[in-house]
Structures are given as structure tokens and as C-alpha cells.
Length: 266
Image 1 (spheres, rainbow, N blue to C red):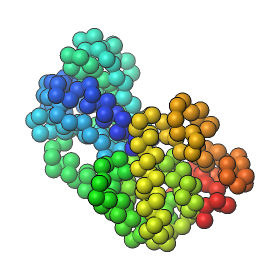
Image 2 (image 1 turned 135 degrees about the horizontal axis):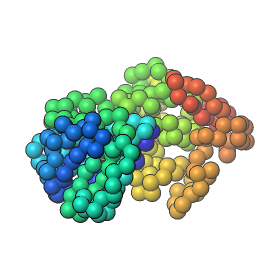
Image 3 (image 1 turned 180 degrees about the vertical axis):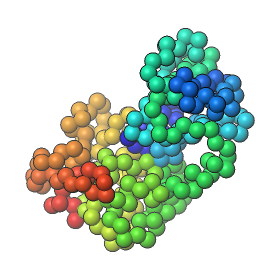
Image 4 (image 1 turned 120 degrees about the vertical axis):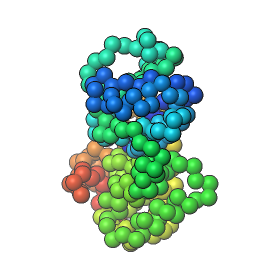
């Protein structure tokens, strides 16, 4: 499943291609046809992301909400709709203007909603590290949510109501970089440590938006970094920890694979 940085990159791309243009929206697959007609031909006024949720706002006050889930994918074409490639596969929604086009396949959610529906979704989401936060309130909101729960920090970081946009890769890497065991109860993690995790998430996810890659190792933050060199513990089970040399652990944790070093993380 795409993590938050990827959804923000997609929102930025859609803004670049379509904002301030009248966009034709269709559903070659048919499942989204009726809702597509509600916004087709309207001007797209904004393309934003919060965590793993993407919102396309039109000038008739309606919004398309997209959550890619595990299988969802976008394809972009720098050609007008009239010259877009022939539809192939199951395209839930096709977007097009006089200068660009895009296809959406396999999302978990693709629906047209009104402003109140958008607010309902936003109210249930935790703070997003990629949302500008000059006052620091979002970081403190994250701290409050974690410290009010006895659930392990490794599970809380995957809860989109606690922090938006974090998935399995960032969860594993943030905790390793912080030296914190994923099994430690949230209310036992200090405010100082949680603010450090928040700040690290902000920094790493900004790099993700810029590069399109999840880069989490110091010294490997620039250029085309090989997948094998990007991570400290993620998908490195059984290999030596890059810090202590002990084997990286893999376990099933709250229904998801968890990668960590039980020597470096306490």
C-alpha cells in the first residue's frame, strides 16, 4: 500500500496537470460512471492529500475522494484526453483536459462527496507529518494521542487516527532510528522521544515526496539508491543489523509484518 509521501506526490502531480482546468471525468469500467457525471466538465480547483487520502475539489463544491488501498494505481499521460492511450484493464476513472489525461485503477475508495463528507473523513484522521505545521500543534497532537494509549507504539504508528500516512516501511524505520522497541506501550514513550519520532517522520517523508523513494539511512539520502541500501531493518529479516550485527527480527504484529532489532531497540 502506498505510504503518505506517495499520495502527496500524486496530489502534486494531479494539481500540476489539472488544477484550473475543466476536467472530463468518466468511468470506462462503469462502477464510477454515475458519480463521475456529477463533476465531469467542471473546473478542478484543488488537489490535496492528508495521509493516504487524496481529495480532488471541483468548482461545484463536490470532491472526489480516493484511497488507493493495496492495489490502486495512477497512470499519467502528458497528452490531451483526445490523444490518451486506448483504455486497457479495469480503469475505474479516466480524467482528461485539453492538455493532459490520467487513469485510476483498482482503488479501495473512489467516490464523490460533499464538503461535510470531507470534514467527516478529516475528523477521524490523525496529524499528517507532511502538513505544514509552523506552530508545532500537530506534533503535540501526535504526542497526546500516543501517550493516552497503552497500545504498543509499533501498532499506534500504523493507526491512521493517531498519525496519517505512516505505513509498514516508515513504521519500522522510524522506530529503529529512534532506538525504541515496537512493543513499548505508547504511554511509556517519553514526550521527548515522540517529538523526535515526529520530527524524523517530517524529514524523511519530505525526502520521499522530493525523490519518490523511501530513504531512511544516513548517507543514502540522495540519488538513485539501490533498494537493498535504502533501509536499516525493513525486509532485512535474518540479515545482520547495520548497527550491532545481530540478526534483524521478523514477526507478525497486529496482523502485519514487523521488522526490528531487539538489541538496538529498547
